[in-house]
Image (cartoon, rainbow, N blue to C red; front, top):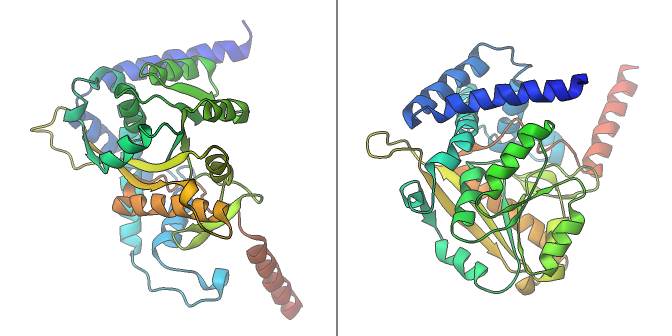
Length: 338
């Protein structure tokens, strides 16, 4: 046996052992474990290893106003203090550790008969009307809340979709997650080379589930996210226009714990916006749709910002105009120094 298969097998055994332990925990025990790990990551481990500075920069950018070096405007007064940002980062890690545990526990604790004990709904009628319209539907979410509970609920209620995501590097662990997610009727689509399957699903009138908050690089469309230009994939808008697909922007927001009256965590599944590309009347409909679903996600994140994945470099790419201005400033400073 070569080294790589052996490593995959050992990692899988370790994962299954950890999964067994997590499945044994109650909701209260899961929350306490996550709080302890959150404290460890934020207050004990080296900040470079936990990407603390990345999260701090992203939160400051999002909530402490427009920076003068990006737009030439006067910055807004800060709305979060350093201590508040620190607590938000801790809350983010606590949420992420709970998310991992809940993902493993989900197949055991959530079924069609008891999902109403776990979930409440906001703007449910809008979602049902979209799925009953006979048109393709694109469900958009972000690295926010518990997206695993959201997708499982759609499957349990007979609304299957093709879920596009990155495969886990270890094929054994990846197969476990594929079986778990497809048990509710969904179909997992690897994001690498996903275009043909996505097109086939749209042509067949099917539904897609996508995350819409990933950096699209220098060739993406820059739209505002928390008042800052963020490179966003325009393929979502292109597909919606091509196949007249309805776009639903949703979320799975963790609700405050009630360990006395609830047997598990509870979530609000909500629809922040429904975008019908047929009704878009704009000079640039692709930009209009892209900005609209990005703004909808931002509104959802503002409801509970500690449940967003702030260590993700959402503003990694920058518009060419910003890059050019920054290089000009650097050149001017070097010339002045010389």
